[in-house]
Amino acid sequence: MPVKDQIEHKLTATFQPSALKVIDESHLHKGHGGWREGGETHFRVEITAPQFADMTRLARHRAINECLAEELSGGVHALALRINA
Image (cartoon, rainbow, N blue to C red):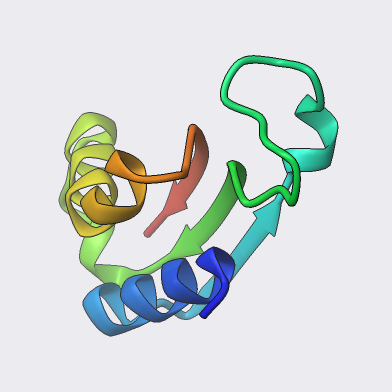
């Protein structure tokens, strides 16, 4: 399964978002640290879920990072987040 699909699946299962976009931006980082041929190294996630309403910005980021720990310890080099309640 492509990494983008894995990220979408985990975030959907964990947070039941009302809106979710996972964008592979690897092509924008060609030649930079962490980039590799074939992409799937740099992602932007835009997620909206009610569960984030009572969380601080830091807590929201930690929750996403915990959910995607396997991907972040593997081939994903960078993850940009926009998180809304």
